[in-house]
Length: 157
Image 1 (cartoon, one colour):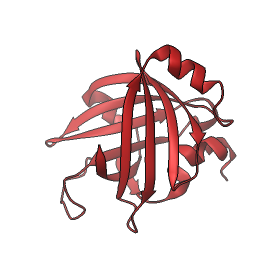
Image 2 (cartoon, helix red, strand yellow; image 1 turned 45 degrees about the horizontal axis):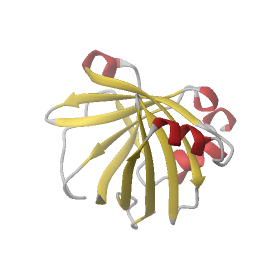
Image 3 (cartoon, helix red, strand yellow; image 1 turned 60 degrees about the vertical axis):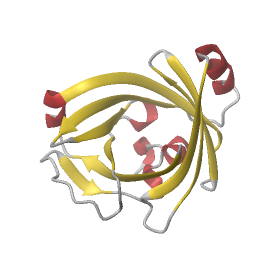
């Protein structure tokens, strides 16, 4: 737990699927979706989680995160009282040049949106980008899951 340094990118095509390490279905909702303290409930594969995320720093690359594993039953119960708009996605772990990209392919209200995140040691870290990686959207709040819940991709122009 503590600070995470992540960069987020759009994914241009499905070429990443040739390099999938593993994948899991994720269902998640938010008990509180304000940027200063988002409280997320998630079922990832056969595990449940409760996560609290703080607000990002100026670059949007770094933010506080606290997470605890909870039972799937507890997660299912908490999802029933979450704010409207449940996120449904498949997360793929893809290895490329020594890094693991977490790629989220969204379904339901956010069908058609695919984003990749890479976790880094520092904000200045240089890494070689795969050809399927598109525009960087780090710090763009409309791509945060808590915002996709309120303004899903299908409503974008």
